[in-house]
Length: 407
Ligand code: HEM
Image 1: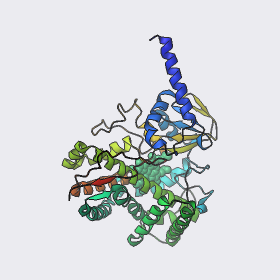
Image 2: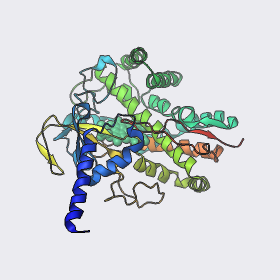
Image 3: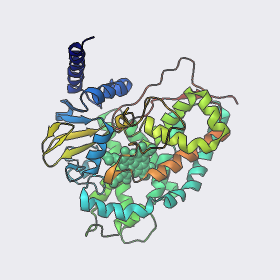
Image 4: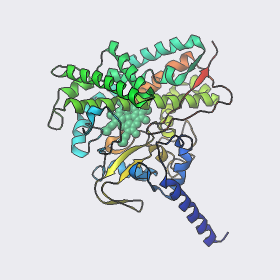
């Protein structure tokens, strides 16, 4: 083939990828099955691709560009004026401390919260996670069958995040049930009704902590001047909503991806069962390979350029973390799940100032739940011919894992 026709072929592919990017919508159900192939095309041909979805956005797909955006909060803001997250009506217009702040305000919150999220602080949750995981696994074991998504993955993370926030043990199932009902709501009316109940629950938790002392996250932020002021009830409400979402949906979906991998690959499962010291590697490779946080947003605040694309204030950026984690420049055969890959930083926990604050806690949860499960149910299988259905959107998981095991 001549050099000219080769170039032409590449141009045609690039034009096709750009056309595909124009309608790319990460929230559309059809994306669930095709997202990795689509983003791989964008990485090759239009790494900062423009989509017209959601009022227009630039889809950032390469490792270096994602890292650059995440590390430059002065240019790419986390403030979500266009409603990147759906929360209770009471929080409309309120900036969520930490999550939606930039630079010095963000740094003040981050510094304040850091002690609750160090590796040592995360390790203090080990016994509680183990206790709850052991109870859930003991309840499931004699049944010989379960859908691991609702019956296991979704049950533990909301209790752990409730514990982190200092919600007393008897009330933690209330939070777990509100979260479950909210994500399972099928109509707008139902979502609004559960949202109202959820708001009331969290507001009561926040208000009851004012003027009290305590060792938990919510008591601490309700009684401290952070960045020069005490946060209002509604700021704390939005913070609490986002903390629950950050700690719960992510860990639930990541666990589902890990268990899907183990169910589909019996050799991998046998290896991990035989050597549980491999579990931390299993967890980390899953966060790289199928990052539960598929995409989050930023807004451009000053004129700039990324991968040759001119950006103006107000432009929205979609950071596709999972795409960066399969960028062939950093992760050869990135589509493959492989234990024992050379250790390298990946983007499954994000990057820069907003890099996941809860990553040590997430690692503890995922490791301990896997340990407890594999010790009692080492041999679970999906039905023959089972085709997993992925969930889609900002968070990426698995719809169902209908497994059986010998009893
Ligand atoms: C496997 C589970 C998890 C994954 C894959 C994950 C991933 C991420 C990612 C990618 C970000 C960065 C978002 C951005 O910059 O736009 C983030 C932020 C954050 N995560 Fe996690 N996360 C997980 C679990 C947790 C847990 C268990 C907690 C705590 C309970 C947590 C708390 C947070 C917080 C507070 C932030 C915001 C940090 C900031 O804005 O400074 N995460 N997470």
